[in-house]
Image (tube, rainbow, N blue to C red; front, side, top):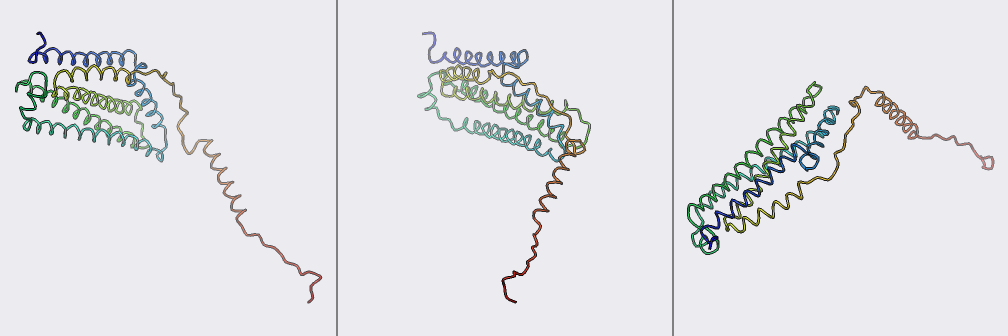
Length: 263
């Protein structure tokens, strides 16, 4: 039999990795050549427009942009902590795995060399995810510094590059976790790993495909307190406040004695 218990890993594991790598290379080609057909290109297009709009806000409205960046920064740091924690867990798992579990449950190569390769590949994926999430947090922090520089002539492209790079490293970290998921199932045998690779490529192809047309955003000039529209709104608010004060004043009445009452 060609695919016996000792050689099935040699066939199914490389096949699953080829499927995963082939799909992501095809996805990278679509992002570079046809970004409007991918979710990554669609999100980056919206983020570029968002940065352009946030750079036109007043200093009082800058807190909204900083709050959005802070939420992305928190997500990156949390996933980075999770990745390094899982890496430490893998190191502990290597020393506590019993050979009875390896030989009776797993259908495949259960040698010590193959088990070491499994743990090393899984550890590399978690460390790669940790590195990507750390770089994502780094670029989001840099974008926060640029957005919080009030009344400056910083080009919009500087902030856009920082936000897009942070988002791209975030996506790369998620892809590393996807690879780690398939390699994690390799611990239970090559068959679960191969099936997980096929199933994950089908799901990712559905999630990474975008059918929404890109919206061409148009923004007005910078909103400032010295604009004519803002001055007119302020005058209108003052007039409304003055009218409200007049209505709130007490009404004084003059009482006259009735002719039918006796003095």
